[in-house]
Length: 233
Image (cartoon, rainbow, N blue to C red; front, side, top):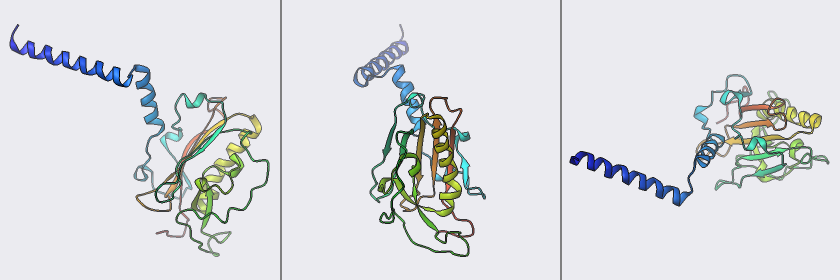
């Protein structure tokens, strides 16, 4: 056997041993590989640069309007809600829930005026905006869906346009669906910030109705945090 073949065999053996060590240390398996791949897809980092610019519509479909939930997530029929810790700039993160009638409020919404989310300012434009104010305290998961009131982890600074024209139609659609069917709806709302900005550029809203495999509710949209006829710096 010549020297080249000997070196090749030694290298092959080394690679096999290295792989075996990785398996023993990390418990790697085909099942784990699939799960890891799904997790990468479901937690895909959406950058603002990858989102189509605002073109006159309050919301823009993302990923072909298909939510990023994994197969495992889509099988969950247990209700829950989860809110991210505020980051070092006190900004909200992902709000995630499996919505149902169990989580929906049974009382009227209370005051939220004491909460001042990052970037909060009071600006009035009476001639342009119907209710005068540029910014609203926007719930990542609407009060009508989970009953969260003055939760600092669930309130961001959003334009009236994003709140009413962008997010509200989807929130109402989900609420009406749950009321009608009593099914669960996986729901995730992700604020997208650029660098150290305190006001997000918009939110990605994902939803998927569990029991009917998305036939009733399925969307993935980005709602732009803009206000027509007003330039926001």
